[in-house]
Length: 254
Image: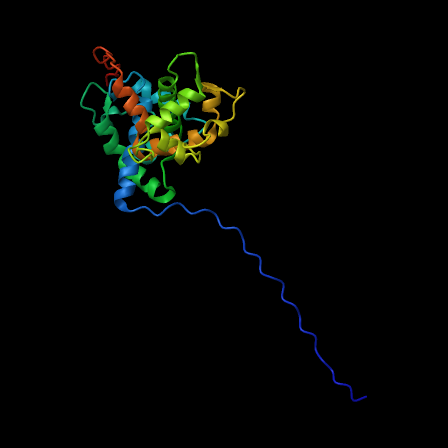
């Protein structure tokens, strides 16, 4: 038969794009240096348990033992060329009876810290110190809002704090608690309290405040970038604190 033959076109299945992993942010040399500096200082301060502005052998060993599960501080110290067993303390070049000053700590670890920040966007060893500092400073802010000292913040107290954080145009001031609330994705201008998960509708406890992860994440992010929660610094500056003389450095002798 003189029938026309036709060839059916094969349908091409739609291409499926493979999910791409999130890439670390591209940082300039200056930004990487600044971020590494801030986050190394968080690590140093977390190791300096007695707050004498120096790290002793006991403090460093305790920090490394605490880090055994995370394995973030140990590799950084090792990659920076320091002896984890500390049999030869002279490699630390310490100026005061075996204590490591911030300048000495920075001198040994800065290069590797900057490399890690460039590669990943942050210093893994700073994660726990940043979280601990953020929680401590947030607690100070929370206590300052709790005007009547009953252990909880009422709607009225929270509203008073947020209203006090506005500028003359009604916008949240930079580096204020209200700005932090905004950075966490809450609206500080309207019903901010209702967005927080609480057992009671008229007040929030510290435990409930602490469990609002978006607020904590925003606070940790600020600490990683600047070293402080700005609104907590303001609170601390309003308090008169006399810590007395600096504690004697509990350093080891070579």
